[in-house]
Every structure is written in C-alpha cells, then in structure tokens.
Image 1 (tube, rainbow, N blue to C red):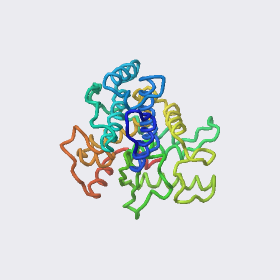
Image 2 (cartoon, one colour; image 1 turned 120 degrees about the vertical axis):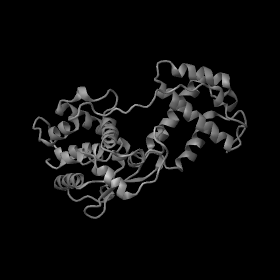
Image 3 (cartoon, one colour; image 1 turned 45 degrees about the vertical axis):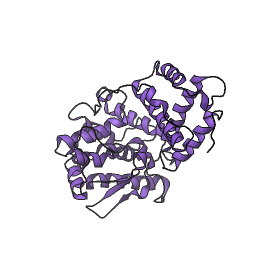
Image 4 (cartoon, rainbow, N blue to C red; image 1 turned 90 degrees about the vertical axis):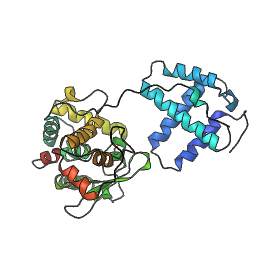
Length: 317
C-alpha cells in the first residue's frame, strides 16, 4: 500500500476494490463501488485528484453536486461507498481518520415492500404465462414459468437467479432445496415444494430437448439461443410476462422482478411465517422491523414455504 498526500485517489480506489474482491462480492457490487467513487472524484476536480485533495470541504461540495437530480437512495449508496473506502484507508494507515462524519448522509424513507397488487395477481400471471403464446417468435413457457416461480415461490433476487447452476437444485424427493449464492457473499438454502420442483424439472427437460444434455455447472437459466441469461435479458423476460398476462398496471413502479420477491415475502407473512423465517428465507443480514435474528431449523423453513399459497397455483400448470 502506498502512502503520502500526493498519491492519486484513483490508484487507491483500485487497491480498495482489489481488497474488496477477496470477499467475493457480485460483479455488480464492485461496479457500483467503482462508479460511486469515480463520479465523486471527477466532481472534485478535472485534474488528477490526490489524497491531499480529499478535504471535508471538497467532499461536501462534490456530494452536493452529485445529489442534484439523484434519488436519496443513490446518494446514500455513494456515501456508503466512500465511507467504506475511507475505512479501508484508515485500516491501512494511509489516513489517520475517516472524514465522512463531516458529510451529511440522506435520510432514507421507511422501507416499504412492493408486492404485486391484487389478491389474484400471482395466480393470473402464472396461468397466463403457462399458455403457449404463438405470437412470440419462439415460445418457451417452461422457461418463463421457471423464472417467475423461482421468484414467487423461493424469493430469489435477480442476481441470485443469474448465478444459479443446473446442479443447484438438490435433495431427495420431499426434501428438495435450491442452493443460492446470496447477496454479500452470504449463501443460503431455500426449501422448495414438489410443485416448484416439478416445474423446474419440466423446464430442464425442455432445455435438453432444445440444446442437448447440460452440465450441472452450466447456468440454469438460458435464453432462446442457449446462452446464459444476462441482467437485461432477465428483466425484459419478466416485463414481457407482465404484458402477456395484462397486469402491468398491478406492478409497482420500479419493482419489476423484485415485485415477485416482495410478493413471496408478503404472502409468507400473511400466511403465518414469523420474522426470523422470512429473514432466513430471503437472505437478509437483518430486518429492522424484526425482533432480532433467530436461528430457525430447516423443518421450520420448509413449513413456512409450504404455507405460501402461491405453490398451490403451480399444481394445475
């Protein structure tokens, strides 16, 4: 690690990101760190910005310009990125202290889930997508249903779906589960009911018909050319499912795939799951509304998933 006030900040950013990479964060997390750090550096000055240029005054001015026209969540994330960056520099004895305490952090509104609106909306969505739509260039309802059900009945995030391998669905009949590479490098196991298991197997069968045998290490979700789905492709797929089902007006603004995950959690709560079960199933590090993190057994988790009535909608598909 270099020291000295004349060291270029962008060089230190590279060192910080290299250190962060050892924690195995997602590619998107590292990209967000770099983007937030570089944007503030560029706002501090057009010339090479050195460590000596990072005063509380220059940082306040840069963050004020950064905040113009951006949502509080974006500003808060950038603040957190810089706080982590300075914490790293202090730990490496490059700086004596962290100046971020002098930079105001936006107050975030209270967290509010954004499930699909309408009591029958999940069932309507699944039913519509299960039908072969000949208006599509290459209909693949088995794949589309698998995507929706993994979010509605297992609560997976977009990034977690993209990271799934074909061999990540494991276990004996009646005890099937999906191994998830969770956010922040926190893996978790989510029990899946026979209905979802059968639907995933049906998708896997249809994939083998299209592209032949696949390795357990291959990506689970692929596009119509057999290429692993990317972020934009998965988002477009979910949006197209909403349009086909005629429920775009029931999707909270900005939620898209996350609305399916929120629907999973909301229905768990409505059907009797407690905060610790939901916390564990969703892969959260903590929930401010919960009474604390309580370890639950695999049997309790499975009972919570079994209580999710969306699973019953899969039986007739």
